[in-house]
Length: 150
Image (cartoon, rainbow, N blue to C red; front, side, top):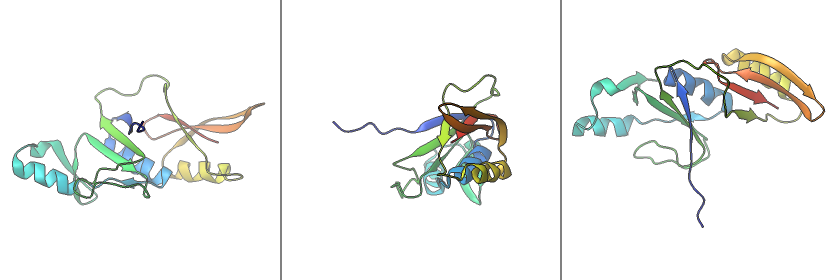
C-alpha cells in the first residue's frame, strides 16, 4: 500500500510571518506560488484581494507553506510534494496549550546554540526541562505555539 501524503497545517494570525520564522528555524524554503496565483488571477478564479505581495512575489493572503529544500515540488504551482508546514490565517488568537507540537533535534551538544539561534529569530524560551528521561527546552514561536528543542 502507498503511504499517505500529508502536511501539517498550523493556524496563524500572520501566515507570512510564521512561514518566515519556521523556514528559518527549520532551514526550509517558503513555497513560491507566484506562477500559480498569476494563472488563477488571469482566469478570474481568484480575486486580487485574496493575494498579497510577499518577498516581491504574489502569495495567497491566507495560506503559505514551507517545504524541505531537498523534497520534490511541483514547478508549475510551487507546491511542495514532501515534508511541509502550511500556515493558514484564522481570526482568533491562540488561547490554550498546543495539542500537537514539533520537536527539533539539532544534534548532540547543539541544543544551547540552537536555542540561541531560534531566540534570535523571534522565539522565546518557556522553560528548561530536566527529567530522568532526558533534557529539552520548551520554546514558543512568535505567535506562541509551543515546540521543543531536544
